[in-house]
Image (cartoon, rainbow, N blue to C red; front, side):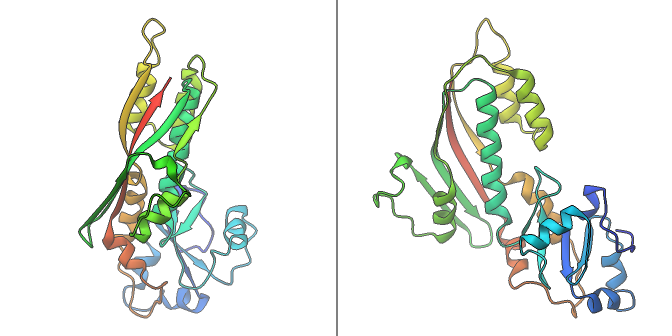
Amino acid sequence: MTDDRTWPDEPHRRKTVLVLDQQDIDALRYEEGGADLLLNKEVYTLSSSLKESNPIVQDLIDSGLVQPGAVLIQSPFDKNVYENSIQAVERFALAKYLHFSTLCMNLGAREVTVEQIELKNIEDRKIVSIQGDLSMKGTGDIKIEDKEMASFYDKLTLHDKFQGGPPDVQAAEKHLKRTGLSGDDAMCSLIDLRRNPNNLLSSRELRLNMTSEVKRNFNVLANLNVPAFISLEANYDRHVREQTEFTLTVKVDF
């Protein structure tokens, strides 16, 4: 970023936001390595004491995210939405599934059902998978030992039912473009197969990587050289190293 202390209008200049004390921001101007951070074209350093009239920053303040040392990751689906590095992977994975379900609704789906959830963690070399009748949520019949998987499972909507109807391809395409998901091959293929009225797709089972987009934003954080005198939120770097991935197997009936 250019060192002008003004919230950038261009979303690509604030993929990662570091919330720092003003004295640390001032020190970046002359401490070794500080200039590189200030001049990073994808990172914005936000003063924790800033009195900002910008509505995006005000939303961050109102959400309690503007705390000294916070590391905020930009949503891949809404460039004005942020989450701290600890919660970002899960929150934005859940958001992607919501956008997928909305896409299916636009395409005339009757039901969208999650059949399997898989978690991979590169740092810990673990793979956790649950499948079967996931709709037993809350009955006590499904017990998940892994805390990360359990948290995601508890928040995920497993079964959506719609009235069904003819596909609105134009609305579906607009939805993908608005959310930045036009490059998702699985979602685009659903649109293509619901486009021809003479032989419409009636059912499909597919695998969706729920974290590929947010991990691209994490790569900005992974390449940062943060001077040693800067104190950031505990374990933020662990979430960079872990490379947690959530993958869903989903069935869509039209």
